[in-house]
Image 1: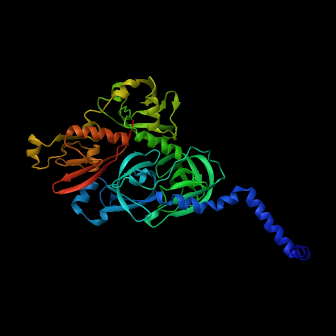
Image 2 (image 1 turned 90 degrees about the vertical axis):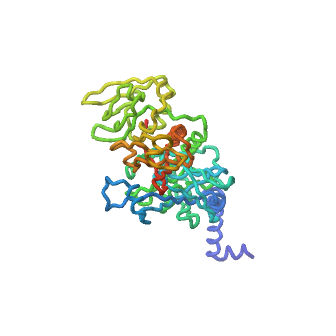
Length: 450
């Protein structure tokens, strides 16, 4: 009867063959099948996507730029002096390790992580890489959390379907779908140079920065980092392999950061890209090798400096070699400086307070204790702040007491040095400071240190 109806009516015939063709395409083409996988992927990983809320000290535009931000904050103590920022993060370890963007936490004085179930936790920075725009956070409190499992490396293909999942403002998961548009993108956004990014047309909504880019099989491809304002509908993610390399390094207790002793700034002019030497740590291998402030490093080991170079990764690789050759431009002349890497691997800045922060600290006892009339036992007291140095710029004053570094209570100058070196490894330093009866947090944003 059905066959007779089919042959006798052209409409039924067309409908039958149309449905048959759709079924055939669904069976042979995984793209159609993957459409139904998206809700499953979101449901499977949603609990591991968290909201990140940070607080940082605001910089009022009406104030003199030379006035210390901390000074304005301490003196005014107004609510508008604190800004709240929101982003997303991904829990990648059951012990509560979260990956998010470095730009979200770079000036944070407090960090909170909120899950889909509404539970909120304090977190601290485990490590950060400003060049990758990646930060690793550690949640305090409980010891077991839902997390996103990172599977073996897969080949990412241009044109494959992609999902962006974030948790903006702590409301719920935000999901968008698109395709991988390009690979290996390099670009500059807001004075940051991003390298080797995955490009996608999946919409990246405000607050989704720090979320995850996934394929339709549930494999994480990258961490969302940037929206390109000059191109509508274009977003970017950091490849997941870079994130995992960073994680393994910061979880390795034996990992050590080689320090040459240069504070650098990446610049570009008509002659090309170069590293400008802003400051040199006294007594460092850099100073002993003859490098001066104002020098331009235009080449490393016979290779030109390019915009996409990753400084921290480069120096780690160079430290494994016997020597490093730097090409220097100074006073309209170019010359070569050779450095024995043994001096870099064995070097520790000393004194750390003066060499890195341009301050002098002392144990809280004897004359400093009497001079500043403090009953504080833990911490170190700031006895000198060098003019125009980093300590002055971030707002430290004589008599300030640094109680904690990166949430670690310090008993004296020896522990101050220990946790400062640990902070260098993390690329992150946060002071807890006591000034008279006020206690506040002070992020220390070091320049790019080689």
